[in-house]
Image 1: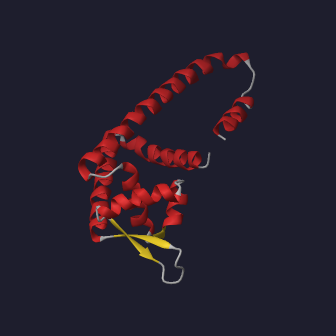
Image 2: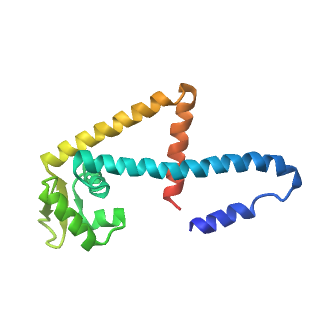
Image 3: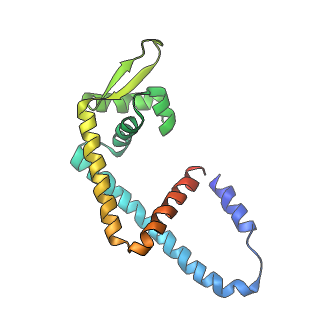
Amino acid sequence: MILSTVKQENDQLPENENFEQFDVVQDEQLALLEQSLIELREVFRNHQKYIKDHFKISELEMEIVQYVARNGRKKMKDIGEAFNIKLSTLTSIVDKIERQKFVKRVNSKTDRRAVYLDLTPKGKNLYSKYSHYISVMAKLMKRRIADEHFDVFVSELANITKNFSTL
């Protein structure tokens, strides 16, 4: 899907020699963007390491805790679909965070096949600490970005997130 989108964008570019100087600036900006995306991967790796070191839980496990915290009690099947994880894989992940007492499985009273996932008080506490960490990170980012650029940064980041989540 991404490759077809890139091809469509490439096919729409005008063929005109007057764009040569523009292309050089664009190439520099694209090279900077590419380098920033590569470096952003390192930021995410550091984030994963922080979660593992401070919360004693993997990034994916934390994402599942966060998903349940933000969306309320959810069926295991729905969580698997949201994360594009097979139910068997999700079961082993949930086994681990259930042993740590962050979540609990709740059987449906109306459908014996359905199993829900809910946060325990310990899981709610974990999410609260993680949420605070994310809030501190956002405040640090705001301090490092000039006020006149911050609104644009936030709106464009939201735009990028929205557009790339559908590719």
